[in-house]
Length: 393
Image (cartoon, rainbow, N blue to C red; front, side, top):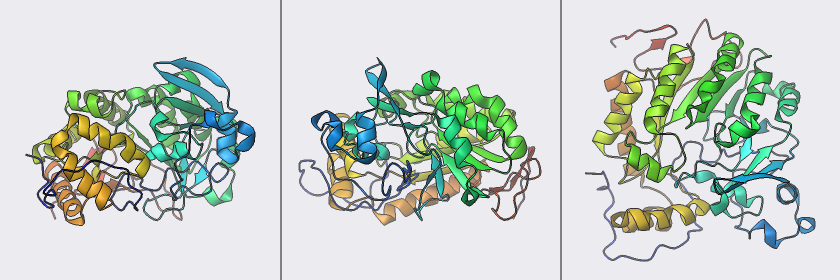
């Protein structure tokens, strides 16, 4: 049975309503949906929900909202519209203290995978587009190859970790048509000494395995596969357009066989849905069997824009959890600390049980070592490049 005992449900049901209180629970990149200072003022602040852009003429808008309103529609399929978005930069600064990097790349705005729990829906509101359209209106940034080549000349990036895919999946279906992620990686393969990570739910990353191997010869790169459950039907319900879990585990396996550092992020853990001991154990075991070098997890985090999408979904598909989610996420602003500690302890136990690393750790910015010399991971037990060496401590 799911672990929800740390906070009893309120005695009487009440209607789910929107929440404007500060969010305090954890997520993969809780305030790191950074699209750049040239587009938004601060990714850590939550914008006021705005009407759909069609209600505001472009001339009345400013900044990224004006750019989005004037972006040309290039295609429409699968119930989704695709636009070309002009931007001034592609490597963007992120000043959140809650994430282990200062620079991000998101080749797209919006994500077609349509994950019910997606925390980054609020980023569409910067463009004065409702967060509910996050998977229906996809913006492909223009001229990303040229932009990244220019951005990488910035001396501030020397020795800095650049995280690709913090707000939108870089290998969502739009990548097949626009190729933004590959264009970025092609330019990165021309350089050396970069410290990169990619986070994705897609097996499409295997298309670029040639570039990943080339990059790994001169820079540090790691791939995070986001997998929330091993159950295919549940995954389809939670992540309607994302590849099946088995395809993602197979992706980890193929990346590792190619000598590329890869691990699994079980994020987010959904209270009452994916948090059972047996389910998390199955997830960690599958990660181990796929050759993952690390396994990490955090509990669900919901911005107000995400609550508007996720809480009605809970009411429709998991009605027994409505009161619990309302108490935790609407009234209290997030899951209780005791629950988060319980899940963290469970994950640490699974890491030890299956010999999985705690997290990928990038090389020191002041002492870069080529990846053929060290894998640069913090692991329990220790895992070294080319072989897994368990040390009994």
